[in-house]
Length: 87
Image (tube, rainbow, N blue to C red; front, side):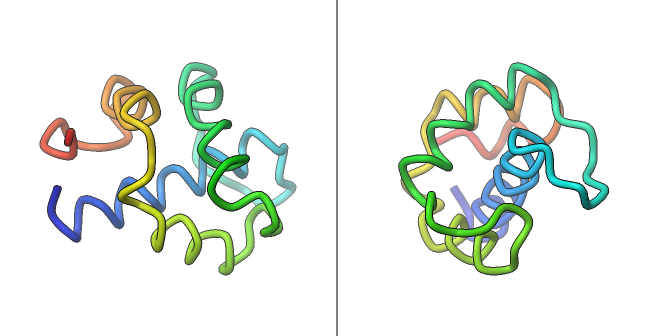
């Protein structure tokens, strides 16, 4: 996966996490499937970061190689990430 695509996946996961946690800040709509598929990634990779924070986004970008295929596949299926993002 290219660096640009990894950053897109990481940023999209961060947005999904914000939606999962019900962040008050406006975020793009994320499907229930993406929320369910990516919740574990947040809990496993960056649980100590406040939802919606720049630190969370940085954490997800730093750990982008560890984002699960399940989460990436859900992001692809929802159109949040291009199919070329698949590992």
